[in-house]
Image: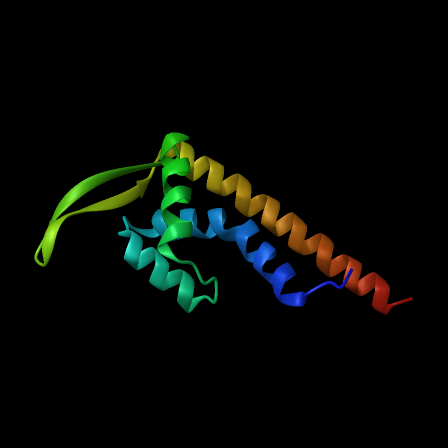
Length: 114
């Protein structure tokens, strides 16, 4: 079985997507299109079909909430905000990310020194 680098990259991106979405929304309330654009800028390419189920899961877990705002160019838009529970969850994810990042860097350093 041949491993494909792009498949592994996609899985790694998917693994950090939840943390990145929460991080974006923690900075300011966000409209899904704005979230997608920020993810694309960061090379975490996402399509609406991926983002909306994630936003719904985070909302159902009480990590996000939303409100409707009038739009100048059409119907009202749903804007997401992070909840207190979401902030705590994000802090835990960031701590875990930092620990994993440190462990990966350590393993790379150890393999170079051998």
